[in-house]
Image 1 (cartoon, rainbow, N blue to C red):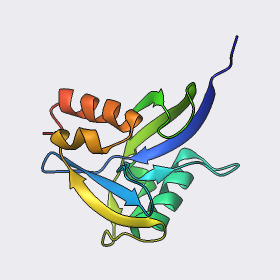
Image 2 (image 1 turned 180 degrees about the horizontal axis):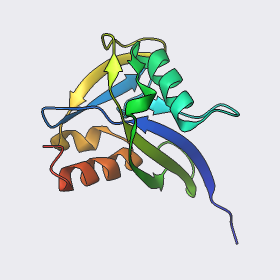
Image 3 (image 1 turned 60 degrees about the horizontal axis):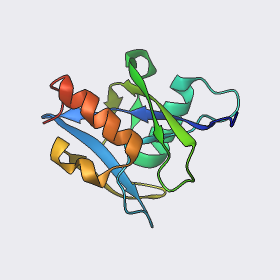
Length: 135
């Protein structure tokens, strides 16, 4: 039996007026929900705080993190059978959002923008839309 290769990632769900904060990295055509991978020994909270600081220059208040769900899908741009597992949290932040590091652009996307995001993010968009959080 072929083992699934899982890319284990974290995502920060930030919603405003029923739209979701998304980012696009240099050289990529798809938007992604901000976040990234844990480094060795990091908790979800530590990894998310670090990644969001690197990408968007804001500080997430770890005490306000709220688990939203875990979603799995075929990894965008990877061979068949490589799965992204996305563990999603919302959380309050301080500072002013601005694209930094490898992020070229940040944008508030709506449900109608679903074709612009990766497979796993489409599943997240569906879930948020079903829960009336994303228009």
